[in-house]
Image (cartoon, rainbow, N blue to C red; front, side, top):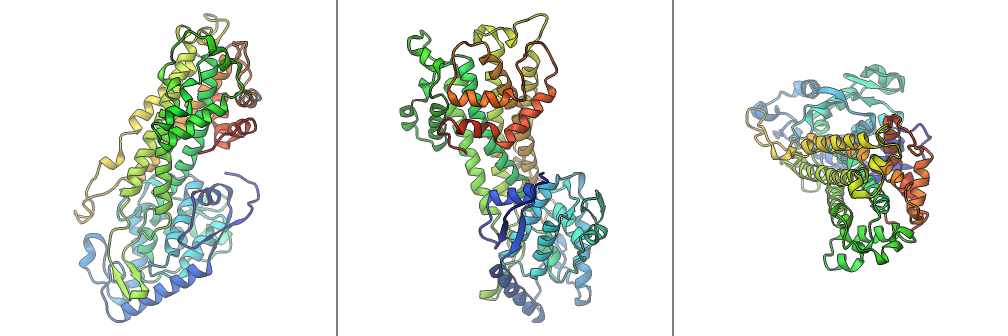
Length: 515
């Protein structure tokens, strides 16, 4: 999270929100506005709903119970109580609260879904979410309790409680009662009218919020994985011949083509690559030779996840939906998180492969029999352990990811007395993907440190791009002349990966295409 004054704004209309915009609102506190067109659509949808209620229509969650209680008709005088009770009863999440950036993304995504104008709610709901975002009032939302169908009911109920002055929220003074947090920012609690509670909680915005930030970070990580691979290739005196674009053109997966071109650009001008012209070695190990094929496949998966999330964040995901132009209301299942669940499981697997692939190159560099470099990349082996144990850490993180990649979407458990008999587990799938990204970022940080150390033992120059990346790293991580604790430096390099500083350094020296 940044304390810099945000610039620009994001206008939400229900149809055109992007991953980049969500990330900016979540992490840079960019201002949010509701467009006039979206407000007019919401008003039309609300009027259509009110007319149906006046005509005595029975409508799910407007004048009936929810879930297995769908057949219970709610008297008109109890409709307001129904709204509050829905929020209170569903707000039973457990575990630590989501980070603020996730909560902000969740608020924005819910506002955008309602802004489409198919939910039958007043613009007041979106106005409240927008005001809370702009004034930085952030509900406390536990991260456990969603099964990913009927929407992220539990998480979104905690969001809704803060909007009506209940639950907890933070407004610059830690978590406190929602009404007090609202009062600090001169906001009044919202009073809900029929249908509005179910519209707040019926959606995929918790899994979507975690997923959007995870896929954004995965794309940044994929760029840095290429830089680390190029540095390791140089440190191991590998060859760039396997990146000949003709190889990828006869197997033209988009990710593979992108990585082949990027690797050739990253290695342009390297004395180490030139030294291979008369080299007797026929080919490198897979972790070097197959960089386009392996990282490229992960890139394709990241792009797929981006596509799914961009559709989802601009969709109406509650139930029932109102179509005012047709004077039609219908119950359906857009709240089911299966599309996001599958994409998040795929994303987690793809990012795990980035880390697994990276650890294999680190392992080669610390093994003198494979690398031709000093054992564990230290001149004082025995007295010093060098980079022996950072490779252990990388191996540990990769093994943790192997457990996390088990697909959450492969599981389902019935809820609501078997009325809701298949659930996506998409929220957990997204949270696992986020953890895998964080673990893999540290694995790649360790590879960057090891590759820089390996290059210090080679008396040939690397490419201009690799030298630039190494120079940026060396400002924070000096050469390892004698043993020292590298824990803080690994974390520092992992944070640097997130900022994109290494990619910018490479871009200044070559034609590198970001993910």
